[in-house]
Image (tube, rainbow, N blue to C red; front, side):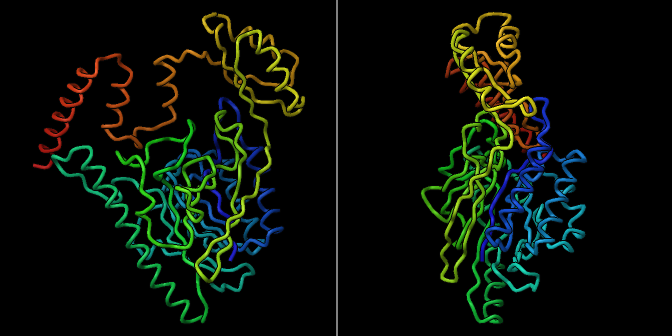
Length: 412
């Protein structure tokens, strides 16, 4: 059984005034060609299919193009909800897409609701593998808050709740696996999914660091024993903890300038009957050049000219410029614009090397309050203040007392 593992497409992303529509359309064409060339049985997208809960119409059209293209090829598609995805948006077409060989798991449910059997390619429906299809889990999905808990206790409780949730799905999946193996008379691989941050994963600035509530990272040892774990949420492709069978595939296109130098990938996963998984990365072509350059004004002239060699008049390079040493000058955008004049580049952002508190706030602007707990909001606001450690600790303690009082009053 051969799975193509991908995630974090962010269809509909509005990137500094630029649409990614052309890139995603080219990505879909490329992906369909790879599915055919490598005889892929099923495609799995591990969350963040859309960039927002209310994607624009062209993003929904791209979504439909992918579904229809894979259906015509006789290839099953499994879509998992991510923290950017709206449960309602994914659920509205779930029944219709099921007719087109696509299974959508956008929200929590009973353990059996997360057990998905992916068929082998060809349309005869013969089972290829069983999936513990777990989407992004929000705190309210798995845990009820309790009065008087410390931040550490809440984190531990949330970790236990997520682990228990995975265990329930795993037990249901093992039952289904046993039934299929008895009926078909051959081994059936078992895999799992997740859209979360795990211990040991390396992130970057375009990933929202908050996983769920105050849980920073989920331990790899807490996952159930399966043949392969297909993860999403971290945009950089990587093994987790050096384990070959636990993988982030990363986003297929760079979603920020910090990802511009990454080689983007999708993963071919060959599942064998003996429980092993062979993983082969497929390098994704760059459909739009993104380049980040830095230096003082004297150095930037040459750096911008060098970056321009990657672009054309029809498809200019998208450029981020970070100014060092001369970053105190007030007319930096005009100076950088003059350097780029006549070159096949579009300067999307000019940054000063000396970051300010306002820049820190802007960097967090992509987050929504829905994804942040009150503790997260308070911690980030406190970090913007230049206070002594003793004062910060006193404020944290006072904040904890206030929250505890409110929580106990609500519970009463």
